[in-house]
Image (tube, helix red, strand yellow):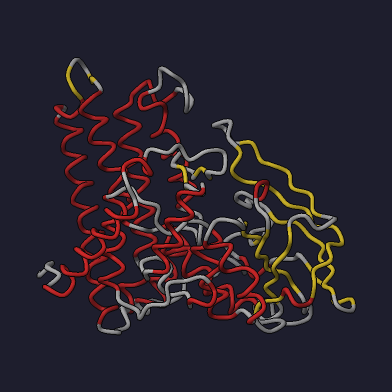
Length: 408
């Protein structure tokens, strides 16, 4: 396997490094994120302060960020080049510089609007979403409609220039702090369930929306249930054609699964866990010297490397404009299962300390790995449950027969 980039791409790497050295100084990096910073589930803060915003604007104008988004909507508008994108990501992380904002808006909705949105929707939402001025939540799951999302029952009835929406959403991440929601609703109740769904953009300040946070066992609030009672949504806020929301949602789900299964997240957990094992004593010696821990750690490192090299394989296919087929279907499943295994080992290394709540001064690493473990369980479900993914890979990827129905 040849992992070299070649002279052209190494020259591009040098160009990116020069840009970072000029526009993102050590003093910029040391500025606290301030109250506008957004916290991710793993405790990292997405910087949205003025310094970070100025830098993102410059980096986007240079073509380093949001390369798939046209310039007229605030993007970098560059030809697809998977190797350049990878180099940018590596160098920005190395410099601890603000990269693309990772979240439901920039990572999932924006690509959907670029593909399916109207000109007015693109002008209204994309630029401010990319800069973190508009924050989004995803109104998909409902009680009784999780993995079988097409069974959703939230309804929208056309009344003049408005859709009137009634129903309930659940497990809605960040709904309590979001400005807008992209939401699936049923607009054709008599149509086959996959064909009667529409994709709406809903202002979270609209009368009739009631957000109720769901308190987790960690004491945190990341999920919410959302009740919609006669919520009036302008007709112009539908994305794609009426009744074609299921097709539109596939764009969103594709980007969600790529986000959830990213190998760089597991690499960061592995590196953090290795430091943890070096600093914690287990049975009178550093955990890193325990033969069982070392064996499990080595096995997981091999799996992380396999995930990364699989990513390089997909990268090669992408640069050649080739369909990855089955290879492209396994990333989200493999990545989330690996994330769980990594976090489980971290919990075992922490021993009794893993029972302390995140943030407790006596908890190893302030309980960071307890939080990672809790989220690894959720990631096995998010974007399509692991067992559903296995069925999809088996049936659509390998051509195996559908499992027998339990109905008689």
